[in-house]
Image (cartoon, rainbow, N blue to C red; front, top):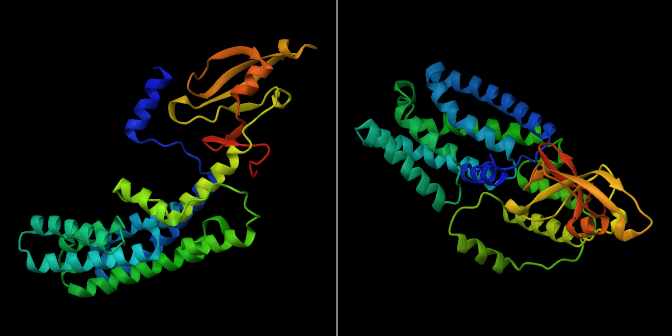
Length: 320
């Protein structure tokens, strides 16, 4: 299968390149174990094992957000508490006043989605909270609007407290995102000059997408700052090209490529100094070629190293 065809299928399926380290993935998994254990204990006490199985499903989805993407907009406290509570109110109301369970469940989820959007507390697990109020069975129905407090609010408080305490020792992933920003500000070095973006222009650009973007404005601006800073160091000299090192062309999408220097033929004449490379990632993967060191330096934007399942820039201005 050609590389370009494979890339098109990855794009169609929405398969993104993994850039998180193994440490980050393990920390997220352990946080999920601890949070769900605490929630299960509380839920079984109030609604019994059968009711807990349905209710804890929504909290399981919340655990994915709070521990895998703790800085995402969908994971923040207002989204967590607002999303679950407004969905619980809607779910209980639909269960009580709409006789047909199928219709009640469908309307509950639809209204919950709309309410979360308008209240700016979109939290996908809220949909499960709403539907559980309808199909949770006698134990859940008997709770009535107490369902909001026990177990929904109590479980939300439990998972929130665990997320704050568990993530706090890891300065780069402190939760809520505000605590993470404070930690970064304390360690921040003087910023390099870059073309700034006005807040009004940023908001306008987002409005043109007319869709919810699951990245905070702060994170997007940080990405822009880092990327712009990287661009200032994109010129390599022929002498920078080393045997055994890997280099990226700095392109995007299907044009992106990484080449590794596998051999070289040095010469007293710079124009005859050649390198042999192999394409190890991106377009043309597994291809090989021979070019002058000068030509390779013109192609290469910066040196890269393997980082988890992806590639990370190294060398001047890389921050590692």
